[in-house]
Length: 150
Image (cartoon, rainbow, N blue to C red):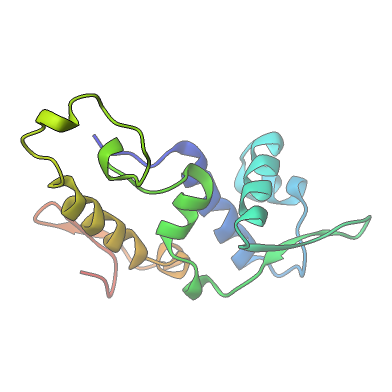
C-alpha cells in the first residue's frame, strides 16, 4: 500500500488552514486551535514548510506565519517532498546511490521509473486549492477524481 505520511497529511491541513485564515498571520497555537492538531506537531510542520519556502514567517510578539504564495501555486507533490523528501516508490528510483543489493540481477531494473514518474506527475497536478475545494471527491473505476482533474 502506498501511503502519504501523517506529517505530509498534516502539512496539507496546516497549509489549508493558513489559506482559509482571515488573519494576516497565524501562530502555531492558532493553527493548532483551528485544526485540532497538537501544537508541537503544528510547530514542527510549520518549520518544515518554512524551510520549503511555502510560508513567510514574522518573529516577535505579533509574529506568525502566512502563505508565501497562493494555494493554486502549491502542488501536493511539493508539499510531500518538503516534508518527506523526494517522492519515490522504490529505492532504485530515488536518485540516490543506495542499492538494494539485487540491482545487478533485477529483472525489472529501471521499469519502476515510469511508474514513479506517473505517480509524481499525478501529485504535481493536484494543488492545495484543489484539496481545499468544497466539491465532492469521488472515484471512477478506482481512480480518484477531484473536480476538474482526471
